[in-house]
Length: 255
Image 1 (cartoon, rainbow, N blue to C red):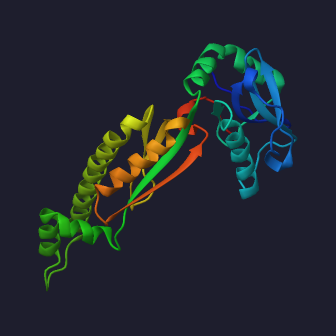
Image 2: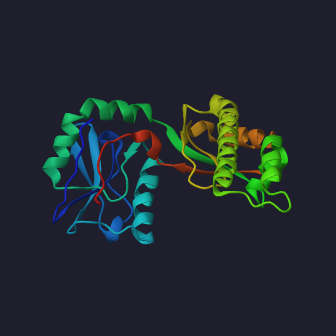
């Protein structure tokens, strides 16, 4: 799909794209307290704010406003959210984007009709992850004990090899547990996407596309999946959110 990337002196801050036929003209205040407007192109409507800036700061109030606009809209109708900070040069550029990608955008919006995004994060609940793996993997325990036996100082290379073994075992564990949870939640989801964990303690982060009417079943499914793990694991879920991980609009944010 085509993309918009620009560095305007003034421009249109873009929240997302929705279906014009269902859109409601009243929206909460946008970033920097600006009004939220709709630019309509046939059956598409882009939610925007007119800002005389080149870049929107990712401060808490602006981030909250961005997400509030999308959350308020997604409660009523499908929306394709774009990342925070996306600014188009002007109305004509935005209209051209919608014209050029009209069929693909309509298809994506139809696919998201009645859907929300739910997020699940699973963590290791232990004071020391390395020691937890040592206690549960004999090969790691044997290498650790051999390298750190009394009176012996391991070399840098030996420490690196120990670290590599730990990383390999933890990654294998992440993949195994992630597949196990995806299989458990699949009956309640239209689609599941695995996002790379960004914390050492995080085992998985799953974005789940769920029908609004099946949200309770999904939550029950999460609880059932959690019961299959012992107390060394912590399950945390959140949502509903606008479907950020399923929108796939190639609009480049300001940098």
